[in-house]
Image 1 (cartoon, rainbow, N blue to C red):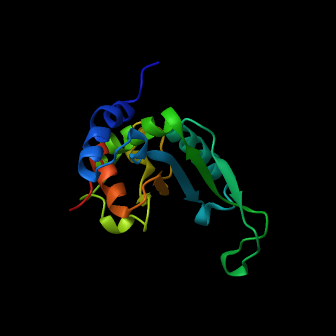
Image 2 (cartoon, helix red, strand yellow; image 1 turned 90 degrees about the vertical axis):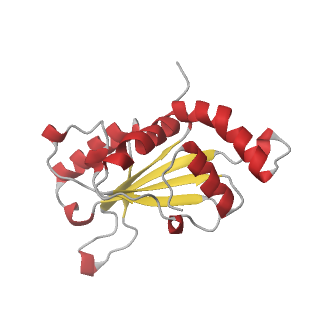
Length: 181
């Protein structure tokens, strides 16, 4: 099995560029991607079992692994939610699946997103996480538009082991993420 494109780019281009810019003495000091977390809240589809099955199936297609359901910890009467009710799905990608997902995100999904002008630097937290939302899951190539019944949105958190926000931004910029200046 061949290495994902993002991983080979990281090893051949990003590591030398990061070492030159930040002055790392050792290759192991260079920040790297740790994991990608996908999260979806079901919202108004809490009682619709067919929609829940479609969301779970489409999320599994996008990621290559089965999502884990999340359940309500306590009842909230204003939202008609009871304790123990399924309220969303989450999954964590690591290794080759993570790099494959990031490759599809950078090269296919983000350019297909309507009115996308780049990722704002406000989407980064104080240290090492990029949080972003995808409004329509249909921008990914695995989702066939003909079989699409409902469109849902989900959140993506790209976690790195960088120590500073500038290092995270530079790492993701070198990997190919379209980040606004």
